[in-house]
Image (cartoon, rainbow, N blue to C red; front, top):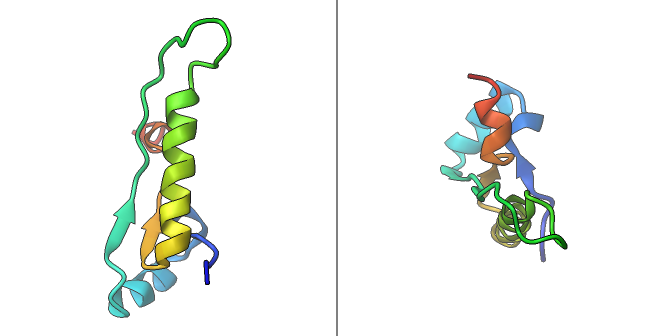
Length: 77
């Protein structure tokens, strides 16, 4: 049965440590290009698609932490 995705940014460091101690050591980081796709699609469609697939895999496996797309993490630098 599919479970709710485990989102890295919604967890405390204690929850992350508990997941690691239970053997959850896989992280999914969706990456997609930001580029023009003619007039009918947004420039973020690759990232949206990668994020949707990553969320689906995460939900099905239940054994991975899901990170938001790379764009969000790069903003922290």
